[in-house]
Image (cartoon, rainbow, N blue to C red; front, side, top):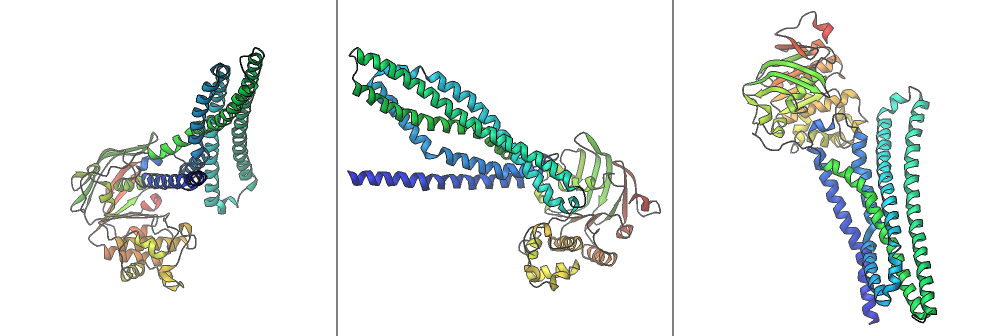
Amino acid sequence: MLLLLVIIKQIGFIFKEYMYPLALYKVMKNLRENIFKKILNADMSFFFGKQYGEILSRATNDIEAFKSAMILIGVDFFTQLFTVIAMVGVLIYRDWKLFLIFLFATPLFAISFNYFGEKRKKYSQRVQESAGEYTQFINQLLYGLETIKLFSKEKILSVFESINERFFKNQRKNALYDVFFLSSIEIASYLAAGGIIFYGGVRIINGELTTGDLFSFLSALLILVNSSQILQRGLIQIKAVNPVIERIKFLLDMPQEKEDGIEFKGLKEKIEYKNVSLKINENKILEDVNVLIRKGQKVGIIGQTGSGKSSFVKLLYGVFRNYEGKILLDDVDLKEYNIKTVRDKIAVITQDVFIFNDTIENNLKIAKPDATEEEIINALKKAKADFVFRLKDTVKTAIGERGSSLSGGERQRLAIARIFLKNPDIIIIDEGTSALDEETEKYVMEEIYSHFHDKTILIIAHRLKTLEKCDMFIVFENGKVKEIRDSLNAKDSTRS
């Protein structure tokens, strides 16, 4: 019998200390994967006006908070629930009259649970919001540190101290209400025990109850109270974790890009904008744009900052989907296509190049995962990224987060090398050569024009020399197409 008890205890120990955490970690793994996929496939409009640090906090801090809460609740919650049910049965069996005295105290337990449960829920939410605010601020600090050091650090420190103080106060109140809850439960338990002892004493005097029976009842009651405290604390924890679940659910419910639609197999004839208008947060970005671009044309897009140039090209690869009018690719509405298949045929080079914290080779292979070493070397040469061959580990060199070990020009040359690997139908260069010197830019643009001579290229550039070989020019002004022509003129220098 003793051996059987030891075996049962060890099985329970293994389940509590290994099986339950393992099951929880698998849930966390799947949850992280689901959130990653949701972000990856999210409609880009979801992110407009959102703080990236807040989203990051939900995807990291909140998941960790959920895991911690589940560990805290743990297997003990179900063990104590079973104990409470069992002890209630024992107490009723022992003496139902004494048990009624205990029942009179249950409203106190219920009031305490509801009041302090709501407080814990409220401040648990505030703690997670403070964590998001903190993450957002640190995120900004790291990316803007170089600029911040040039200005008053005292102001930044003051803002941080304010955020940190709010974080601390919310954590303190969260912990305080937990203590108040446990104290109130204990006080209610003492009151119930006092009532039972008084009533039991009266019944002992009247000969209705023995001292042994009363102590036996109180022993069972003590087990019930201890288990009830743990159980109610678990219930409070479940209530407190609800805001965390809601914040995680916000990510899981983010709108997704449609994966259905017509497959885009490449541009055969033309791109056409028909009466296209775009608003973002009630701000008019583009208004009644009508443009026809033939396959193979090299299009220079001109206009002052904020005139709508970048928004015009971003529409093509689905950054904005809430536009009015129609964008036609070979007479088929862009919204009818599977947007992923459209993006597969488009390459974009921007001023702010995105670089993974990985090797040069892996950063290039996002354009073509099965690229050979020879293809990578040729692409780097065409992009005049000779600096790669001077590095000790060449394409195997790790380049840090956002390519921090590279200059702006070097990052842009890697982005240009990507388009040679991808070999798209449509190329968009949005200030994508701005960090290059004139000689390098001239070389690279010659390579692009030569290699993609039969492809459609849209170029936004402040240097007019970059646009010299274009055969079509679209001039933007205040979100409208002011004119379309086939050559540059003297006025364009003031527009670029």
